[in-house]
Image 1 (tube, rainbow, N blue to C red):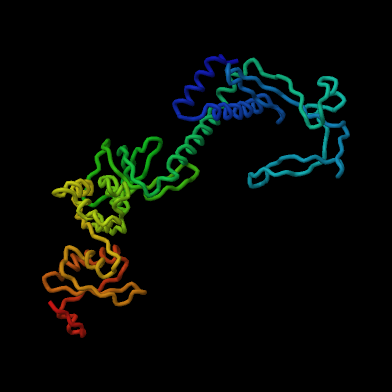
Image 2 (image 1 turned 45 degrees about the vertical axis):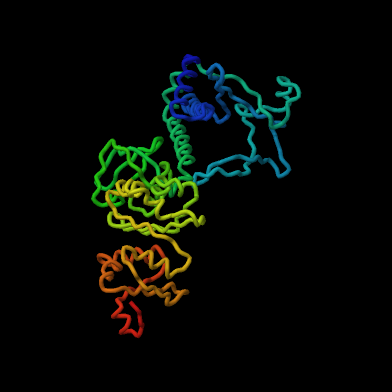
Amino acid sequence: MMDSKKFKIALEALAKEKGIDKDLIYDAMELALTSAYKKNYHSLSNVRVDINRKTGEIKIFSYKTVVFSKEYEKEEGKLETQIVTDEDGNEVEVEKEFYFDDRIHITLEDALKKVPGIKIGETIEKEVTPKDFGRVAAATAKQVVIQKIREAERELINEEFADKQDEMVTGIASMEDVKNYYIDLGRTQGILPKNEIIPGETIKMGSSIKVYISKVENNSKGPLILLSRKHFGFVKRLFELEIPEINEGIILVYSVARDAGNRTKIAVYSENPNVDAVGACIGEKGSRINRIIEELNGEKIDVIAYDNDPARFIENALSPAKDAHVFVTDEKKKQAMAIVNKDNLSLAIGKKGLNVRLASRLTHFTIDVQTIEQARENGISIVE
């Protein structure tokens, strides 16, 4: 047999290194060694392996099940319940005819001679550990143990990341291929697709990087963790990180609309009338907002004051345009009209319609922007 003390030390060192409960590895080893014994010593299924948790000593026992007699009968006839594997690989219970086999059965009469008081269904064991089993077992059980360790590691990773979807984490850029960056998150890697980085930014291997967990999906190979820096939720988490009042709940984020690499609009408010939500997010001389802009590779950010009045909120959301006259034309369908002078038209609409599109996402209203002249042509009178 292998040196029990060395075996115990090696196994527990492995458990510590992998961060896995050592009893889990002991259980996996017992299953692996059972398979090894059956394969190499042509055993029937009536064996079990026991690893002494204190000494590391391995022992193998064969056992016989106590039956009433060699002509064992149940009420239904000469039947017994057995566990078998069906065509799909599932274990199912079936009833089969009972055949006495003295390799796996012992009659109650004979069993009582060895163990007084033993009952039908109980087992009698005998140690059958081969002298050379250590060498055979180590070679045969290796892959099974590795598989069990991988399963345990996957489970630990699943538990760690199960509730982290929609959160921001920091990792290390470790690898890249044509389509993706691979971010080291500690126990596992996340996938940051190259179309999910901020346009124009450069990711350097070995650098620390903040990423948003957009999706956590479990599969047979372990959790698939998809990351993003383009997601609007990434901006929200950055604000929570950089603005203590948001993290503490003094300032609340109503909504975020983003076109990554170009512009983000974020609507904030406070239930405390003495708190300037917009000013707190910007910080003295822009100190707070500038840290977020730097992380976003220079992306423009409009911090918008949320208002319960939809018209006022839409007016705020059209920033940097000023002096917009907003009318809610259909509250149920979430439709509104914004009327601006010529000087503010291009600002309200934005390049390729970006500003009004983001304002619509932020407020959840479809916004029709018109000039004062266009409004007058449509019968709407605006006093400038």
